[in-house]
Image 1 (cartoon, rainbow over the protein chains, first blue to last red):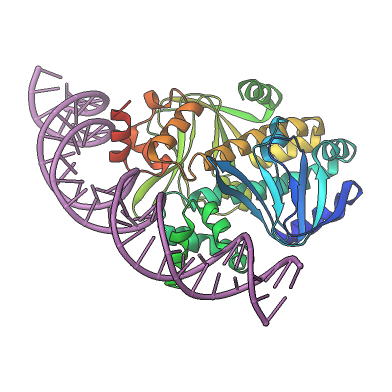
Image 2 (cartoon, helix red, strand yellow):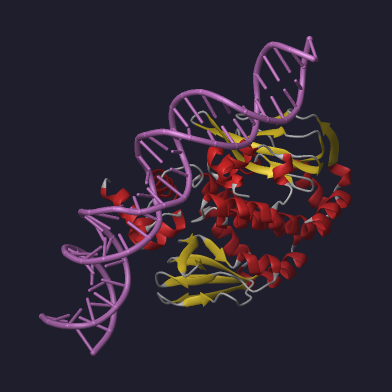
Length: 177
Length: 177
DNA sequence: TTGATTTTTTGATCTATGTCAAAGCCTTAC
DNA sequence: GTAAGGCTTTGACATAGATCAAAAAATCAA
């Protein structure tokens, strides 16, 4: 992922906007349209939505991760997701329309864009496997395998909702190392 | 999805191989490399893998759906998935290497390929949401929303494993319509 | 047809995890 | 440095869904 991330930064630099967001800052509000992709150079972002009042994390983007309002980008509709910074974060913004225009001019970059998309996709595939038929402990272990340092950087509650379990359960899982 | 599917068939016809598979036929075996994408014109395919002996459905592709050994295609490694036909199916095969070569020659088609990928992606996103924090009944309802006729065409056991619940539970959920 | 598989349903437990509640801990701000 | 608020842990209890087992239905094959 990392090399590819760097490649993307290099080749798409003409259309990237570099920004800094403070911890706690909301980069995108639910119910609005946004076709920005957020490429995280450092820090942590997360997307989340509400299921009858409960805050559920949809996705984390740690350093070299990516997050965006996928539903909005693809369907061009108001998004159900919010996106917020969990740490002070350095982020590159990539507007999807600009991306397409840029790719039209530089078709050589299509291959790179495709590979990047594939990685984002396989990440989701793995995530689904990590949720199906696994116990709370197994889900947690699976997450740690994929993102070893996430526990130091993201609160237990956010991780729990990402895994589809309650914070109490996650706390108990953790208790038995 | 459907229009886009037709568009793909039309524009990529030079590299598509048309095949017919009988019900029960294994199109891809786990532990082998395959970079074929299976575009289902009619019939049903499913991919599945084993979690300590238990057969778990990873994905269904009904008419106008797509399935492939995603891990193998993206990582070029032996796949954990099997792919089988659940009905006699008419399928178009698309080899990923050929696709890339073809796209190099016809960069105009990149946009179409990208849109197609996006739809496949958003499908997965919705699926994850349909599994996180939902009860067995809610998961089932969510599936029926997305694939109304799946129950007539796929066995209860396959659907249950796809939803991450046991067949007994799914049977009981169904009992109370 | 008819027996043999396979799939689905039903029943009786058992258990992991949810829920509710309260207490401890750790930050952050003044 | 202390108060305030947010996180995390712990406990008691409730419950959805797993597991095990067996019967009933449906599908298939000869």
